[in-house]
Image (cartoon, rainbow, N blue to C red):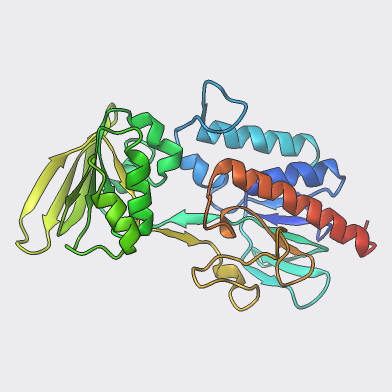
Length: 314
């Protein structure tokens, strides 16, 4: 089995937040158990080059970075289990978690289940994520210096991504399936006022086209009015239609905001249930960076340790 039925702390999720929490918990002799879920390492496992994580001046591959974090946590005694938690019971104490029909008890829980970028579900999408197809401008924009790229979406996040990308790209085309943006007026005005930004209206992407060597080099789309099919060349595509925080497991249990993110108290990782903490993209709708997730994982570990001390569980 590889883990105890009774634990001091269980971490749900294995991205930068969960594994950083594991490092800090392990160094505090809390013997953390990390349930990695089916996408061990989180969103970074879908990212090829990471150049903005401190300590890697030459960059690092996303999966490699997550492997290093995992090894560091394991070095200090964390146990990483390639299973997901299917059900939680926070009404009794110690808390009860269910995985593969097994019940595990724990004195504290750190939720680091992350968020998943919304995707279009079209041909070529799964194949080219991380290879010319991105969901994070601040993560990958640097790779598109002097390139002509496309941003898909019509909300504030799409406008923000497009404006940010003009720092690098020579041209950014916003692709929207209607001829009216749902973004706020101030963001629309900023985008329309930027000389590097163009708009492709009434366009519904239907396929990303590329190869193993180049990655994405074209996008096929349908005109939503004429139904005509067109293919346009591109140096890269950013999908900016929002994120879904992975909070289904905690609905009606933990406090969740109108966008689906877990609510934490003040400047802490505390949730509405004492002994349950949240870190990373599952509670961060603003920054959504690997380094901020890692920082909040550290916070959650320290909060969990203090909780256990105060409740005489250590």
